[in-house]
Image (tube, rainbow, N blue to C red; front, side, top):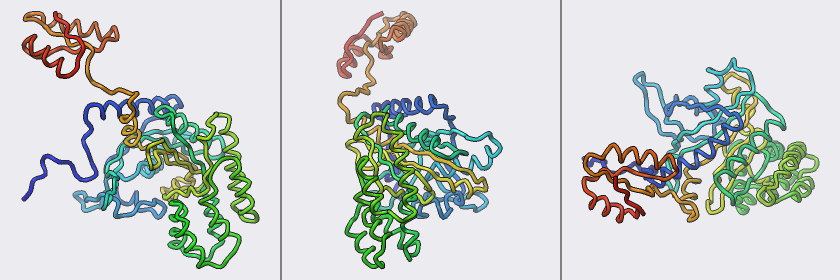
Length: 388
């Protein structure tokens, strides 16, 4: 039987040296934003009961979960999402807390991708959850926290805003089942005009069908709202549009310019989103690195009816982008390698401490001879060898 002792499972990897330093840098900058805005850190178990993720609104397919059983035969999964476990935790451990509750997390999620197609099975994520409050103040707090977080680790980014109720209000006017609605949603999400038109052409023409057909193209700045009102007039989607416009106008003074985009084709995969939805992109990364929005019905699934909103950041993707930036260095080389002659070992270690306190990156040489120390420094590109 073949033994897999020197490789990692498909979709996982080891992080070495510069990669680990870049990850620490990215996560540290994001965590500083979260702490500054008074979010409190929580950690949920890497293994949860399957039931936590089996809710109809979870949006996570059973096949995407890594499953096992405990010693009582109960079905367990390796955490595929962080929002659901936090909803479970709040509804039990924090149900008597004074609301609102501000939480943040930094933990890996695990998804089983049968074909992988460039995706990984293990992803480090950071995110926030603002629970027990709704309204424009809460939505602006979550969105601006996301803007601050992505600004801390990238300059060339964009934030796309949408509203879940636009599509839901329009699709409720159609005589279709949930499966057909999901096919339409996926076509809109992927901006697959051909598939969307094929699906809509089979339906009786009406105002809602015409409006849904337009959603993927309603993408841009302030002008999107006027176009959207024209195609959605007379439907319940107008109320969601007005609220989204109000959010947009509040964000404009941040000076984001063309980094702030309205996208009415933004229909998140997780069915628990009920209001504002948003995604964040960084230049050079195809997939969204931020995904979030309002999910007012989710906590009710855990017997604690309460409003909530939040977002997650794919810190693995951000890290890889930072590593490709030639203007950022994550070298672990010291500036000075300190060699101790026999009997001077503690003096050399003290010298290293002093240099580090002065802002000079120093390292104590553990090699036995000066010649080996100099050879090592030359090989590693260390500029200076200091003798003690």
